[in-house]
Structure formats: structure tokens, C-alpha cells
Length: 154
Image 1: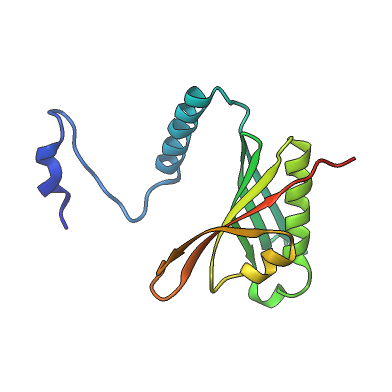
Image 2 (image 1 turned 45 degrees about the horizontal axis):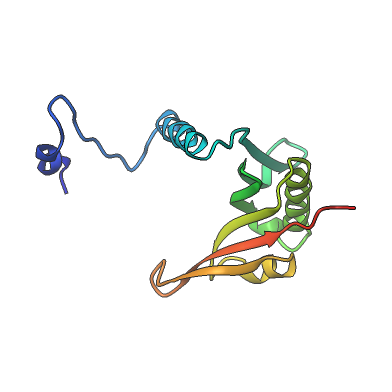
């Protein structure tokens, strides 16, 4: 579908552009604007990005986790472990490190999304519960929103 057909709905002087390969700067711009809006709407500031990686002896990333901390919550956006390194405790180590960081930043919960064909049982073993399910996303599978409540440490 061409963007040109939608141009008529925009105010004068504006143009629509879409891309299946947005630049990191474009994505960051949108993240920053949304953070500004959310901060203004809630009065909650102090967000932070989080990235935790495991590297091999050559410095190559073999596992990692990234997300964002904001409003008393760590939202984990990506978790990945190289196929040959799975079932070696790397995912567990990543989650433990993320939880430790979340606690340091005063978070009371961790949220993440996973698909039914990814790792819902792994997350359940680590204290996550399913709080929402979207069927047929992607086709024939489920998109699961998981949460782990963090009890304050003594």
C-alpha cells in the first residue's frame, strides 16, 4: 500500500513516510517523546534503560536482556540466549541480575511479554505469572503478558 493514498488526511505541509527499516535515531526519537508524555501525564520521572549481556572470551554477545525501568516497574523487552548456550543457566543468571537491578531501583514488579512458543514455562519457574493473553498472535499461537511481583527484601 502506498503512503500517497493517505496523504490527503494530513494537514498542509506534512507528509507521511513509512519504513520497515527505521533508523535507530527514529526509534529513539519516538521512545523519548513517549517518555516525555508519560512523565508529564503521571509526574513520574527517573526512567532508565537496562541492558545486561554475557560475552564470550572473544567479546561476542552470547546472551542478553534489555528493558526499561520506570514508575516502580522493570519492563523486560528482550531476552535472548544463543541456541548453543541454552540450558546452561545463562537465562536464569540474566533474570537474577535484572531482578537485582530492579530492586536497587525500587521496583515492585517486573513485566515481560513472551509468545507461547518461546519460554513461558521458564518464566513461570522464576516466579512470573500470566496476567493477559492475546490469542492468535502470531497466527496459531499466543502472546502472553507476564508479571513477577517483587516482595521487598528484609
